[in-house]
Structure formats: C-alpha cells, structure tokens
Amino acid sequence: MPAFDTTATASTATALAVALGAGLLVGVERERRKGSGPDRAFAGMRTFALAGLMGAAAALTRQPGIMAVGAAFVAGLGLLAYQRDRSGDPGVTTEIALLLTYLTGMLATWSAPLAAALAVTMTGLLAARARLHHWAVQWLRPGELRDGILLAALVLMALPLVPDHALWGGSFNPRVVMQLLVLLLAVQSVAHIANRLLGARQAVGLSALASGFVSSTATIATLGLTARNDPGQARLMAGGGLLSCVSTQLQMLLVASAVQPAWLSVTWLPALAGALLAAAWGTLLLRGGAPHHVEEAPIASPHVEGLAAAQGDHLFSLAGAAAVAALLAGVQVLVHLLRQWLGDAGLFTGVLVAALADLHSALAAAFAAATPDSGQAVVWAVMAALLVHAASKSLTAGLVGGWRYLAWLAPGLWLHTLLVVAGLGWLAG
Image 1 (cartoon, rainbow, N blue to C red):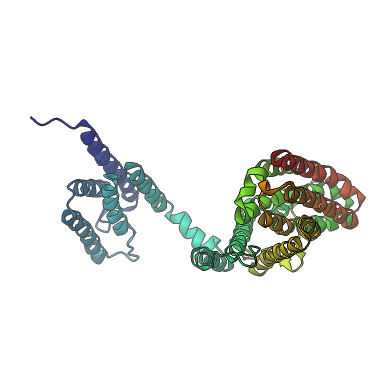
Image 2: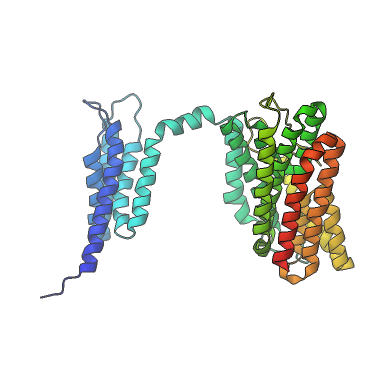
C-alpha cells in the first residue's frame, strides 16, 4: 500500500482554500453590484467562487491543455454575457475579473500568498470604482495628467535607455544625471499632491517644506520678505524656514543614493537626526506664531538661478528640475577639474564655493569625487559645505527678513546643522 503524502495533501488543500477564498472575496463585491431582475449582471458570488476553484483544479492536473481549455471556457462565458448585455452602459469589468479569478485559482497552486494578494488587490480596485472615477474625471487636472504621463515615460522609457558609463575621468555619468532629474520631479509631484490634499490651513509649513526641495535658501528669503512686511509674523515665517531645512536634509540622502550610495552609511543617521530636530523646532515656531492670516500667507515658489517650483495644475516644473540636474552635473565636473589641478585643496575649494549657492550641487560633487573611506579630506569638505550653507542662509535671512526673523530662525538652523556636522564627523572618523 503506497505511503500517504501528508505534505502534498496539505499543500493541495491550502491551494484549494486560497482559490475558494479569492473567488468568494471578489464574488461578494460583484454580488453587491450585479443588481436584480432580468438586467442583472451574469456573475455573482457563486460564479466567482467556482471560477477560482476551477482554476486551482485545472492547475493541479498539471495538464497545459486542460488549463487552456478552462481559461477559454471562462473567456467564452464573458464574451457571451457581454453580447447579451442590454444595459445602457455595458462594460467588461466583471468579465475580466472572472477570467482573472480563474487565473488566480491557478496561481494559488504555485504561490498561495501571491494569489491571495492578487485577490485582495483586485477586490480593492473593484470596490473603489466610484472613487477612482471621481479622481480621474473630476479631481485630476489636465496638467497633472500630462505631467504624470511624462514622469512615467521618463522612468519607464528614458531612464533605462540612458547610457550608464562614466565620462571625463569618472566625473560625469548620464544615468546619474537622469536619476537626479527623476528624483527631483518625483519629489515635486508628491509635494504638489500633498499640498492639494491637506488644504490651505497648513500652507506655511507645507509650502516651505515643498519649496525646500527646490531651494531652501530661496524659501527662507521668500518667507523673510513676508516677515519684513509684517514683523508680527516673523516667528511663523521662521518656522516655515526651518521646515525647508528638513527638505535639505532629506534631499541630501536622495543625492547620496543617486550619486554615491556608499555615502548613505555615514549620512543617513545625521541627516535624519537633523531633519527631525528642524521639523520639531519649526513646528513649535509655527504653532506659537501669529495665527491671523495664516491661510493667506503669501508664500511664492522660489526662483533662484532660473529654478522654479511646480505651480497651478502642474505636478512639477520640468525646466526647473532640468536646471537643477544640470547644475549638479556642472558642479561635479568643475570640482573634478579643480581636484585634478589642485588635489584635495581643489576639492575643498570647489565644494565650498558651490555650497554658497546650492548645497546639493556641492554635496553631489563631493559624493561623486570619492567615497567616505577614501580619506578625511572629502569628509571635511562635506562638513564645511554644510557650515558654509548655513552661514549663507543666515545672511540671507538677516538681510531680507530683518533681525527679528533671523533671531527666530538662527538657533534652530545652526543647532540642527551642527548636529549633522558632528554626526558626520563621528561616523566618518
């Protein structure tokens, strides 16, 4: 008498149970929408449950012909039901869902967790019909749709085709530049959507946080203009300025991951610690700031060196992000040439000069020049760039926003910068 294989039996039972559960899950959602009477939809809970079981049973036979016949049978049922549909708005959602349920039952015999995840995802999409329709037709703006398609094309088509070869002595890599561009566009898109979802009451903090991904210095200058015109809001504007510094720290990690991932080992902890401190201090200033006219706080998108944040119904500014990526690449080449000419002194000088205008271009150049374990010179250059950039922000805040704005901004600005610098020195040392 042959031995009873309990493992195979348990595996088969699991596959059948998952297939049945997947069919019932999708079927319950379709049952609620099929209606009643002569015009009701052709498939409900029992049909979907049987389709899932049929898929699992066909797959368990391990006969490709039987599996193909089952799929053709389910597809034929869907085609027949569609032809007999006499409703004013026939669709193929139920027909496609039935065939996918059959395939999910087949998948359950190979990977039960994957089949269950597919069933849950499918049910969620079916249940969210009204919300998805409202989002696509009413909430999503034409410019956002165009920008979303463009971003998808860059990620799925352009990025894989860009050459991944270091040029000019390793100082320039087209794939790295394209990755930076995609990161900037993605960050702007997320900030734009978040701004629409959260509303106007959080305009000061959210706009500063979003604009900081383009230029924290420009954001501080813009908020400083508001503080100079209305000194009573100096604390509120300083809180927004500190929140833009959160973006600076997060973008440092983005630049490191795109240019030289080896730097993440020494930057992630100091950058996150600095970002948390700046966020907490900035939020405290925002809550204690003057509450009047918060919703009308005139926070313009920063324009520095031709860079502009996304406005209106656009997810991002392609020209602005391209200019940022070009600036980062140009500074990398410049710092590389200075280092070739003057050695570590050239690296240090180039990074400090770049940090006066844009921190991330300076950091990208330093990250691309060497890894953190290549020597202390590059680590000191990164630390000095952070300090120089903080000084540049402080000078901008004082000149544009006045002493009261600077007094509220400077403590949080310098404390979180020193925390990041000290963390870098400790981890790299």
